[in-house]
Image (cartoon, rainbow, N blue to C red):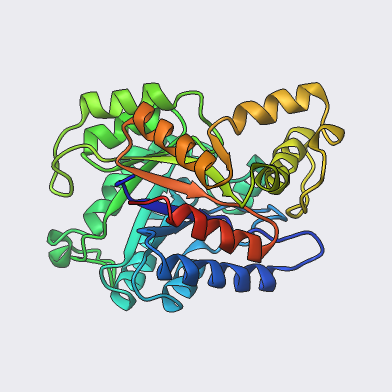
Length: 327
């Protein structure tokens, strides 16, 4: 496969562990990705989730950028309705100034949390409706023209940091096409609208200053191990997490179990399996075959790989196997 591979890290807090260890594991993960051939490493914004330590997303991006040399580091994404566009421009202007040419800014319109937590973030419940205007405002803060504006992001003005639109429905595809921005679809947890969204994005794309032609990234869960059986056991951590979401249970990231069928009900299995249907799990050859099929089906320009494994050593081994598939 000749397309770029990139990574999304949720900075999971393992069961019976803590946030500090999660950050230490993410540093190891980032350094390994930097040593290998992965193009970018993104961090996602979530709030009030006991399993995820990346709530202060720009801070974590700065940490991982400081521990790496080559790989692009960015947000996948910042949930813009939670923030003032000016504040995000200042934060990412600072990151780009510290780590020039290595910062990406992916933007989403979901709150990344529940309604009560969103209110605690001091944002309006209808903030998502302003998402297109907020994206344009943020884009303007990074423009060369902003250097002469009455309100400037300092640093930030004139840096023209690359923006991405993230989506799990057709809304983001339409916006990315209209603004001429690269588009990343979150099929690693919401695969149902993927093909329709990608088709809309490519059909209606308008060239822009940032991008001359459409560029689509597709999210996919990938767990690789020496054998299919070993990989399937590692995958049970993610399957348990999605089952817990269906139950409304908020817990830290669970260790793998020998038999997932003993954990979920048939209804929970159906729900979790649908959300995780864009997953490739197995040995090197199994993963190669699965990813080749995904690229052929979606015509993706890049894959955003989500490799959530409880044990850090097994996670790093999975990275090495995935990287070896690029040729």
